[in-house]
Length: 627
Image (tube, rainbow, N blue to C red):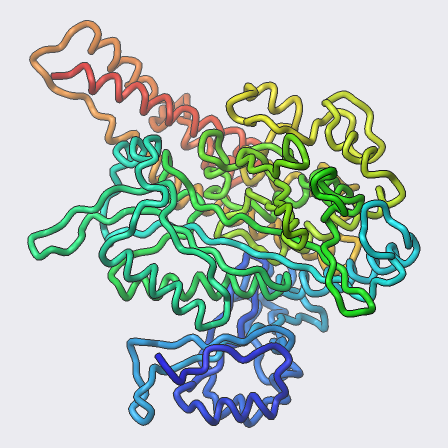
């Protein structure tokens, strides 16, 4: 709609903000958006008149407090010490969220809520995800400026370190999501076949899906996000048409991409995009799922996170800090090589922030273009930029545009806490730059390309870190694990990295923002959600699968049917049937979780998934032989 206020730009003076709100009386509410350690955003309805009246107190953080027990800050905000202050952040854009189902009588415009990114402060310390990223970037910036001023001439860098006056951190995320008709049951086998046949990717959208997608692109552009594309993704199923001509049985996967921004702003943008997309599709009668793996056996939802680094020089110009002087001869400069090496070497302690749920790890399986190994790809030669989609962190280059040089972290999903991931990633990048700044680009390329077992000055001897091959097709699972390290199979295994790699934890906590208290709280919250989800959701789903694998009464039974049923029956009992002397896998898993024996529970969870797949296979064989 015309004449709506969509965005209040970063650093707008208070007087201008008050003036804008008075010019737009359809904006009735203010909501302070704090991001807890699970990546959840807060929302409330504060009348605009109170915000205008007490604006100084909102900036100071004294106008609004929340109960810390209602957000995910375990071990920090406890029941007997729960008060959390919420100061607003004036250094990023503020967005207006409009309710198109409720129009203001006086203005005939939709009622709006000004969503203001904020910090969470407990006992005088900032304890939220936005603060972790904001404060980490301030630390990394100071350290990088010191490094560049100390090492004025850096091989491959087009500017002198002494001329650098500022550092710019840029990021962009993209959003994949499934949409479907409410209450629709997914036809997994049919969609899996469609996925293999590539019938959906870039397919033309239709009906309500097309309307919603086009409305999203237009709306997000109104908010100044610079949408670059909206399109069909690999997953989906052709919808059907009912008697009235409307599409039914909708179930397909989409993606929306938008322009990069400052790292903190990019994370804020992502949060807001999810809200807008969900509301627009809901208005069209469609459900949206941002889950990493909403349907087992089909493509999951990724959110590839792009990471960039630039320098501002005294003349005001911006220079990409990864790009080579001659992109046709070199992949990157020394800073670029050091950055990707730091990211890969320390990834074990970044990974917990990337994949903190059962759902996220379900997505990271071979065969679905989702990375499982800590490995990069640069390209076969500098003249041919890589588009290897099987690696964890790829180098993205445009030979004609050095400013486009960046890294793409492919393991993230729409519910990844981007704030914490970027904070840990830029800390790791700093570590890599600091350790390699005096070396040559040739030496760094050689070390990055080394084989497992070869010595490295910075990288670990036992590991390889680069592959230009298809990681899924060209290596066995055993070869992948030997070269690039075995990936964590459960949330518990992933969170154990904080205990197993103290030197790497020291790297990401060096700035003081992502401090041990924050990591401990994040880990505690992730493990509580892991335990709760297994007991309350996953185990009931698994029991339903077991119960549905029933005996089929048939007059045409053969010895093959009896053999198949006996295998199936044994698998069902192993998973779900207790006796006095022997407990089922489900019971043993539940007991391990409730007793806090998470190491055993983790192993049993892996075994459960394997046994469930085995049961499905047995049941499929059993059913196919019945007529």
